[in-house]
Image (cartoon, rainbow, N blue to C red; front, side, top):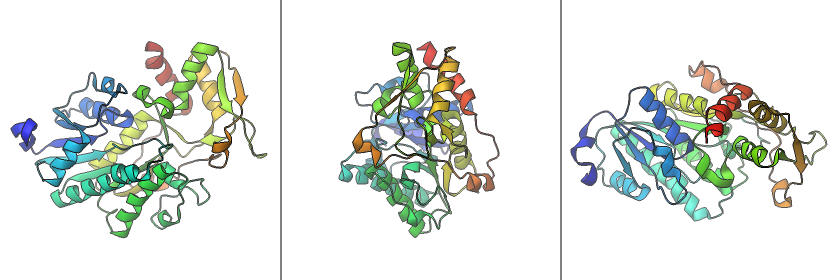
Length: 330
């Protein structure tokens, strides 16, 4: 296998694609905490300083995406037990459809087919972006999947794989996770795709205030638009649960099941910083208004039925841990 030599012959390898990314690096960290370090990280480190996410982690090797896809195509990856496929272009603003189809859809198909052929457990990142504006609801039931209408090509690239897996009867053999609004350590490199908590913390430090979009619907006051915010530690726990339990096969929402408002988020961030809240409501760009989601909330019933029983972290507790344990420490 070239650079990896004989070390890949071990029967206990775990692959984490996107291992230097946000959720991926946290998966690697938790695997380390649980005693696993025979890990192959797959990522393109590029120039956005995501390499910093690898500091302090234990893993055996790192491959670029191209090198990894070549190794999969040539069947040069012996001894892989589990693949956590978390690597993708996650920018909802990306408009290059051909790139998204290759990087998010075809890449996932290639890896899924390889895992099934080799008997390796395959857990992949779908997305709550597949739900579009939520008009069809947020059910992760198989019968609901074909009805979904994503609002952007990122969501569509994820949806196309979900549909392919469903159509080919594979969801009983693999696990896909529709992550809702995940926040927490490891997102510094994500630029405009960082969580609002990360952005709010730095806004408060620099200006003393947080900017939130105004509402353009009479049934929602300014800042009362809601999301299902998930602490990354919970997202990781769900991900590893699916990797370790074949009973947890299928397509699952990864969310708390409890929608909270942007105002709640802002106030919790101020509280974690020991400050009184100061919120400024600003105009939303017209290009976003027709695509803006006012309500997202995961239906967590299917995940619970699969045996996941741990409670999710309350928003205030997660923000406090993130702000005081990570952001405030630089």
